[in-house]
Length: 131
Image (cartoon, rainbow, N blue to C red):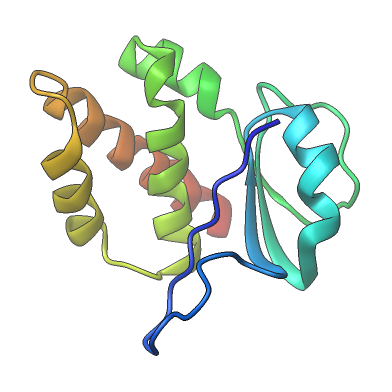
């Protein structure tokens, strides 16, 4: 299981580690099992249903990020980018165009189209879930 904390605030951030999570993205069963207890009550759980089969709650957003990456983009390395696009749609924390610019500015040369497509797929699939 691996973990990366992302702290977003309009205020100054003094400590870059999340104590209780507002949102947990779990890409593997091991990560879900290990980090689900850190999700605050009422927090948002987003899971990769192509990799996770056992859920600690019935309240989650599930999309097959890895399957979508393989079948729709042709490369499983963008499963996390698809997940980012879905989080963008589910939370509204940042507009898709802003997220796209940020991802493309850091994407390895030659992968821009793949990453842009992955973000859009994640966003579109999550919008379907919200309906």
